[in-house]
Image 1: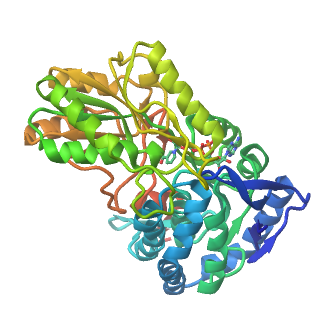
Image 2: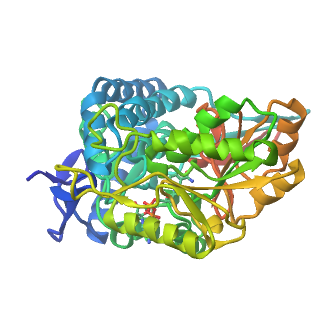
Image 3: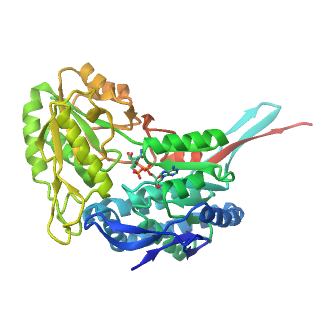
Length: 482
Ligand code: NAD
């Protein structure tokens, strides 16, 4: 059985303590590979490799850095089938999702930030007759990147690409549930000519490896994507050490559908925004608010469409619904469906675990689930479920829709469906969210800021925000006469 190891100083290495853990295919429930499971000792080795590489990488001319990053993007594109298959086995997601969306976006991250690095200009300020000040944006040296399991290679590269484009070297940890494509990225970086030590990957659990990265006194910057609970813990450690952190956390996103919207487009897209990747995208809408005049019709049409979503073996190109990431997560999602019933909700579609035939008989599948009749303030509508479960609630007025949408501790993304221009602007401005889509979902321009408000995070990634995050501004003032 294959073992995936740490990638340190350009080489694959087992854990210092010899530790390993199982890698499970969620669509079969079976172990298919082994993962090196490290701790602080491996993080120290990775840090040293990154530190040794830092000076050389910082001094590498921008054009050369860009060429290497562009080459990484090209190799990812060339290997899209191989990487998509690996992502599917690791995560249980449909092959169409991995191949059509996630792996291409991982390539795009490298291509985009390679280009962006050369567009960053520094400000200068002239004090007439006295002096000129300018701002250098310098890399930090070694930075730490920690990513989750839901969009494995895409979110891993979303951090690494801007970090290295800005001239840093990296100690990174992918989720222990989905470590394979990140590990394969190591080979790709070697093939592209990335100097050894610029990217180092340490595998293992969050407390053993993630926390060792966060606590490392010489790793001065942490970019984290994951749950709000872990994000808060990391924020606490970073506060003690006065360490810079970007935290991209959970969500409980609202979709507001007004009676004046393009009904068919809203219906079709809301199926996608609810159940893509089995609802395991931080940007999925989970609370759907529909205006009274179209409420009954929408619920009935939505239910009909959702029942037609094809669940099955993730390797089937026609499959739209794959497996949940783990048995534990499946049980958590099912427990929320039970909670919803206790809270007075009616499960109008789905609600159950699905037992598929072999080879998927041990897999973690849940029916796409729609719940109506719940109050906005119940736990089902307040806590992140992160699965194929949505609630639908009616509203009367625009004001009411905004109030209901904002009644949650989270504030990552929202979607508004309306054909009225004044309404779209007004509502977008009032929603407590870092990202608002109007009449679309998941349409992403990599130049735009990405992140959430309230319990959904701190700081922004994407575009200039990412390059700025990974560089330290330094003001230099030069006096004319002295
Ligand atoms: P998680 O917080 O459990 O784990 C995320 C990563 O942090 C993993 O690599 C994990 O090993 C590591 N980790 C765990 N404990 C740690 C610790 N004490 N110190 C350092 N690292 C630690 O999250 P998850 O279950 O992997 O991912 C799902 C969550 O991620 C959901 O809440 C989802 O909304 C969120 N998410 C947010 C975004 C966003 O951009 N806002 C994107 C994707 C996922």
